[in-house]
Image (cartoon, rainbow, N blue to C red; front, side):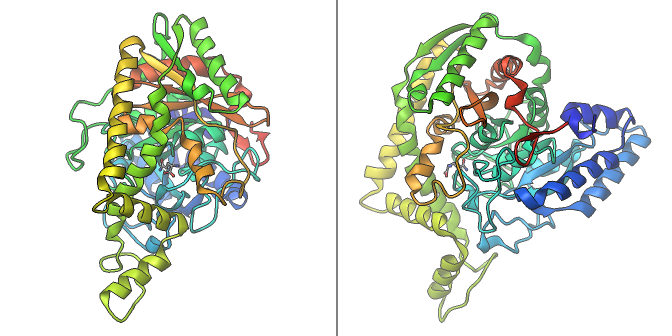
Length: 491
Ligand code: GLN
């Protein structure tokens, strides 16, 4: 078996025990990237030299007998909206094409401290706005299961890199599904943690009240390690939850005996027969493992999508005001400052970003604010209250993740609403700030992976992972990565 094939926990154990060196592990990762990147386009930047230096330093640390960390020698990829000091961070946008951050995001600092080796920065929809990675200014990523299909988005590069076995661990950001939806479409595990569990310091802001960073992995156990490594209080993020970090690894064997599980039927009727069937089968699998399973209707969750598509653009229009050509990023000159601003933003932002800025600015403008932004916030409160009622009766909820299997490149680019609907089952967790995971659970009618979602109340990651671990055991191994481009299984 390759070193990469051992996964996050296996690699860290091998490096720690000196059975393998971090440099050997990295060499496998770089070779896989070299071999597959041309077909998939997962990366904007591969930091081979820096990664080699980091791996060598880690091997020396092990040789000196020092603790190499939870993620010793684990090659990691980061969505290119997380700041890396000295390495360009583009957000897949022309406006930041050459921007080199002067500081590291907190997750990057924590990953390095945990012994992870950062190998590169992955493709995304521009500023994380999209569900297919086709909104990248630098070309789409392809789904390794079928390169004519999208990997999902916006964290498509990270999801596909893990699915193709280039790295065992990658991070994305999830504002309205951008970790879970691509995880589902690529047959990997993707987690959106509780809002405030992982620091957003150094994550380029899209919609600050919704954004959260989380891991992509091939297994649930690896996901738990990947989350543990980056979670915990950070004074640099004022929304960071001030409580000690938890370890989830010890919980995974606990099972779901006696847990109360609700299957959200409102979502089941919104998705394709394969995706609905996967969610029902997942609920049954939890029942077979001893959980008390019931169907539950939470009709408010279906109002999540329209509320999200007001709130997220409103926050984005404010956050993206900083790209004005003055302090950083692209500048296109003009006769006066206003012309310079307008030309810079017109040239630097792609179509979807401009659409969001216009929608958001409109929703926040005097005279319309209450009718749009205020109304969306009231709907958000209804969703929060509906979840609160549901969690009086249930420990965790189960739902489909996506409306369909991976769609073809170009299939949804003509109509933005078709694309937006991809996240109907995802956005309520963001509106509520709750954790949720997509677990690969089935192969659908088109032969592509289908994920199932487990939702939990705030800081319910432990319960979420327990249910996810049971689902992983019940799922056919053929439904998850790694795969080579074309869907060929990897050894
Ligand atoms: N697809 C959603 C959007 O386009 C979610 C994006 C995200 O979670 N970053 O806004």
